[in-house]
Length: 113
Image 1 (cartoon, rainbow, N blue to C red):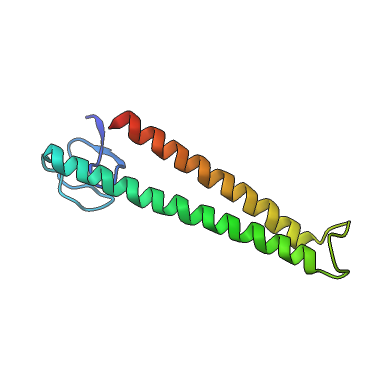
Image 2: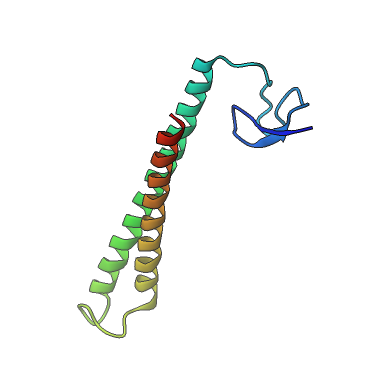
């Protein structure tokens, strides 16, 4: 009994099952074209999620900076308000993580393709 990856959802399953327990797809022999189509669809879905994550990070970063600037008293004051600084830090970390994820996806795609 060996563990293989489902060609549809890419999760680990037993090689003895007839259908994937995660996505309920039948495990039949797929042609190379179908395998390439599934890999392309998985890459596009993951890239879409990574792009949306980076846009969310940039949005948090920009709104946090604007909030800090317009907070009372006016301008870039010290000590900074807690919520805008938290938004800036979370947004920057989110953006960096999303860009690293996209870089990893590109490297992984070039290696396998």
